[in-house]
Image: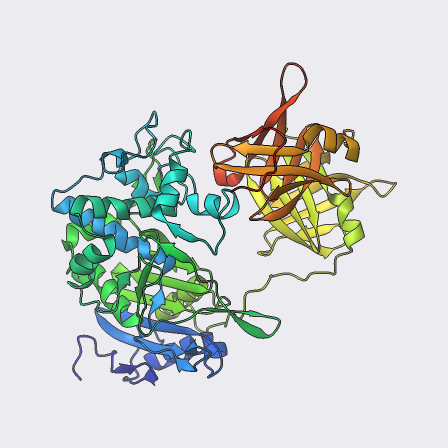
Amino acid sequence: MKTKYPLIGLVFAAGVLHTPTTVFGTDTSVDDLSTEVNKLFARWDKPETPGAAVVITRGGETLYKRCFGLANLEHRVPITSTTVFELASASKPFTAMAILLLEQDGKLTLDDDIRKYIPELPDFEHTITLRHLLHHTGGLWDVWTMLIYYAGFTHYDYLCLNDKLRLLERQPEPLFQPGSQWKYSSVGYDLLAEVVARVTGESFSSWTKKHIFEPLKMKDTFFKDNCLRMIPNQASSYRKKEGAYFRGRQYSVNYAGGGGAFTTIDDMALWMDNFRAYTLGGKELVDRMCKKGMLNDGREHDYGLGLNLLTRHDENVIAHSGQCDCFLTMMIYCPRKELGITILANDRAIQAEKLGFQILGLCLGKLRTARPLGERSVSHALVKADASKMKRYAGGYLVEATGAHVGVLAQPGRLICMVDGLGMEWFSPSSHGHFSNSAGDIHITFTPNDRGGIERARIDLKGDLIEVKRIVFTQSTPEQLRATYAGPYFCDALGTVYELIETNGRLVIRHRRYGDRDLVQTDEGEFMGEMGFFRFEKDANGALRGFSMFDETFNFKPIYFQKIGDVHAASP
């Protein structure tokens, strides 16, 4: 077989055949590369586990291709190069390409107001453009999180784009002025897919098949916009728990754009080569996808049009990862080396993004040997938590330098800590009085006083030290909790009702779809829970009017809940 590059030979899904030539002029041979990549996936190179499909291309030729594990555990179906995987967020480059092709045809411009095509969206003071959505700078709510965790839906509900639109219609204002900040938002890409459908008069799935996938000969790639559609050769996804594999969650989603693309590694090899050959769209369009976005003040951010623009191993690369429960994907392309890498996985334990960059290092000769990542795990030792002692850390703290509030909630085996304006993290004990997050890069150390009480703590936020002290206030009694706070509350922004109840001396927020969530009092009239900070408001007569909830999902802007009459709060 004659190839453009002498180092590249014939590759099969079962193994690699090639001549032992060096890679990119380094002293790493293709044999060495194959051996090291195989080592990365050795844990899944078995006939009884889920696994992954991996392809490496150079200059349009296949350098390496192997498949590990099973596509379906129940029926013992192996993964092959034609096994279809869900791309999740790695679908976004295709959606961006669709919008750019329509602009190229004169059907729209990136600076068009999104309301030109979807007029039912709110008419905010500042215009949100298609460009803002492509760059994740539009300031729209993270609608998926809001629907699933706040607005009364669950992962098991049948969701349509209309559900997202109805929630966006309630957004009172953007999270920030469009173009002023970068905040990842899949809903923007769902809206862009709807723009394609409304402009062309075709479904997004049909249009992209005709104008993107067929021209690139990606015969097994498509957007799935109907959750009941059957997909031949589709992989199932899995997670391991207590030594046994369980099926990954299957979402009943009937829209696409931010996700929803399905593909194979054979087709992804063709897609990656378009960044070299410019078969679809031409060089100017592809180059625009790979150009960093710019905020209103002239600062650049590292997201192009549907692509992350990064520097790894001293090379500029374009990339996008994706995760949909137990499907994990990673695509990397290095333009200067004409090198492409794709990993499609169906095991939650596979860290596709990290593995992809390890493979990149191996290809470039920057890594000599591969260190298998194995299963996801914390990077630090943990100790067994004493449930009775965990409770003493719960409560409110004050950042001494800024006056910001910190809330700590105790749960079995862990703490939840939220810093107002920064976000929330989960912490496990690594020693007595010392807690670390799962990544091991954020730590909390509590300092007891002479009586054993907790008055102070230090938060090590990735090297930045934050000193906090306990907020001193009078805790509400059970009777006060019932008399002051208990009752139903309606949130117009979410379109749903919650109920606050007192149980066993603590305040609990209840929703019929989510169950009970504990709250911990952090100050007078302030509580904190997994949903965020709750700050209660009273009218001129001292009667409770409602509360504002602050959470990083809403960029710490308030979502208001109004106290209503004495009715049961069961409706979503």
